[in-house]
Image (cartoon, rainbow, N blue to C red; front, side):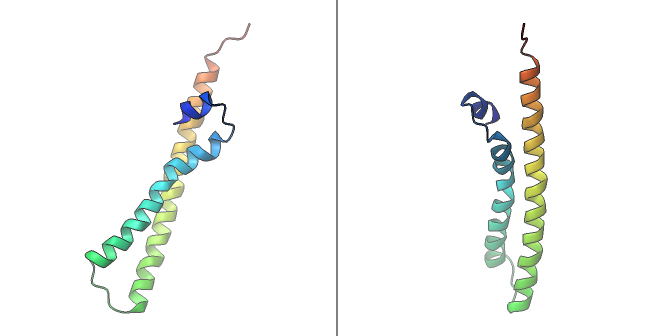
Length: 88
């Protein structure tokens, strides 16, 4: 994905490389909705609120973790590609 953005001369590759990988946290949070209603048997407002609070914190930290990995790997790839270009 990073290579295609660089070929298209997209100067916003920084953000896209982060958000492409960080979207997995959004998937994790949406999966927590399915898991709550199909597998768990929580009764009441407060247990459901606690569950979604913890799952939102987990999904946010997972998004930051995977997004930073995606960003740094794209940064490394960009430096490696442009470092191989010889300008005379």
